[in-house]
Length: 452
Image (tube, rainbow, N blue to C red; front, top):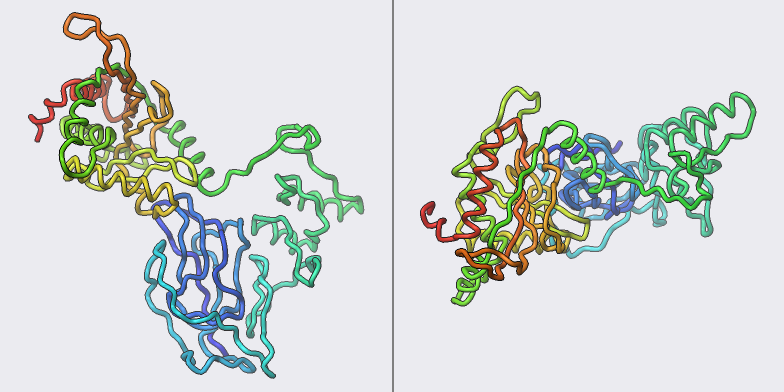
């Protein structure tokens, strides 16, 4: 008898409860080795490859692309010893045992071998179709599962895809004997929702045909309304912003600052040999110095609201546009880095955001956020705090404006600085002092020499 191991979705990062299947990298019946990536998933933080700690024959996969799998739920089952009637390749160990999981999000080099399928008696390939997430289909002997309604078969004998995401909906349909393929979903793109199954169950009890539900909000689908599901990163952002807005009593103050001298300093620095210094790197350096003077703002309120956590290190988050939307990568221990080092790390993380290569570790653990919304051509903003952080500095575009300089009207490079803070960690005096210090450093960057 084979030893069948179940590999569950591990915790992929701070605060994550699940991940959405993007694509499977193995097939049922395929021979895999220890730590081979088996599935690519999208979390609220990043897209990562998940390696399996078992070597053997894949007997079942759980979850279709686009479907969410909870942390701790089954991903795959693997037979780690030969089963009756199943021949393993000669070079494959008869009983591969579990090894510690290597890690996530790091692409491994090609192992040089072809994908192998387990041979059935007589040399025929034994290939089982992918099962719904609640009823695995095994290529070798596996525990029996409750029978589910038979899915329709499309051209070529391939089972048709039933538009269902939630495993709970599938289970409810199976328990009540509902054929999901016979339902028309009320969700976006015909997605079958729990309410659709409940109506079908009620219809079976009365002998009536199941009624179709209107699109939520009372707008019928014929009116041309579109419902875009919140998934992956977008859903995580929505949940985090909602929580921040609900829990944090945030306030915002702002000030205009003459950035002419700061821009002149940048041009002088970039005229010398060495890496180029960005405006964002200079602003990040100003933030770390300001937080050293006002440590109350490099903090967060505890989960139960009973205390304030003062962070000794500045893990500086910054807004970056990536292929999955706006993300907030984190520069670790920014207070220890020189301006050039901060600039290098900002550049590395920005490029990773652009290419979708950020890992969950790159996107978690921030203590303060710098938001340069000036790149979008706007002057001001009142952003929602990046929960659980207590403060965020926003920087508008730097643009030539009339300005009174040394008692005379002149054209200067001016920016608007806005500062949003959690009023629980400090009062307006502290927030105003922080913002004024930042503005003074922007106007007179030589002040930073006193702090270095």
